[in-house]
Image 1 (cartoon, rainbow, N blue to C red):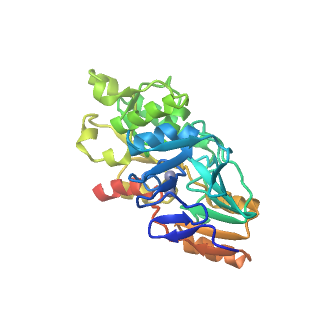
Image 2: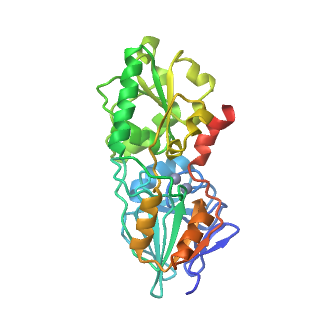
Image 3: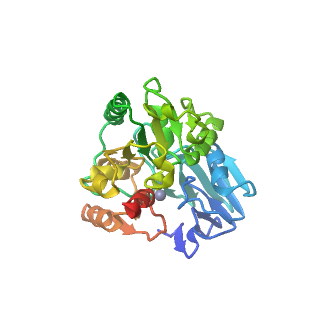
Length: 339
Ligand SMILES: [Zn+2]
Ligand SMILES: [Zn+2]
């Protein structure tokens, strides 16, 4: 089998089609899986994204970037190479990139999850010969609870804080996680207040047609008594910053897959950890790899060597692909540095 896609200094490159997928340096043509910072970098001449993802990508790249958007499933031909984008279920507009050339099919997942999420299209299984998969949480210890259970925990925590007259500050990635939290909580419990970084992304989600409950930018709240009983959604980088001090004695929590690991919450110096991830857990990863029918698997993000060895032992051709994607570890580490 030929290498339809290969790593170059600029990123994952398709020579036959002359384009890159999520390049980390400026290139002529970038096909983007999703708008997280490590996948969508500025400076390329042209970008291709899903229609659903165009507003959030614009937010990431600024007004001058040349962005072309294509509906999920609709093919685009580049030098005779057939390229199509399929829902990855990770965040709004996230896509797996399917590349077909001379009967050979590769799929690059970007980041993905198969659990339903009201803020983005459901993951679509795409059969392929070569599957380039993330494995941020590629260890058997990672097994996500049902999101409904997690939201019940968030509600109980929020209500107890409200009853005690304290504000509840929950940290999650400003793009994706924050909106998933907003879409999942019961807005009748109390006011939903947001950090500016979250509110900017909310606007892009609403512009894209995603239904979110009413939110209010914290900076616009004149009456500080309203903080009590509110759920305040902020990026992890706000923890320990002067920004959070305005809430006085408040309860803090973080929503992330990393919260599955005991001790992680303490290291991050927050009161609570809710296990809510926008990546596949171990079982989802294994099920998905098998269902694609791929004979070769290339792994990016996280525990790549462990997963590659596990798949090799099961008779698959599996290798590590050394990309510069950092996964959602970076937003959590912002807290660790301050703790
Ligand atoms: Zn991502
Ligand atoms: Zn990623």
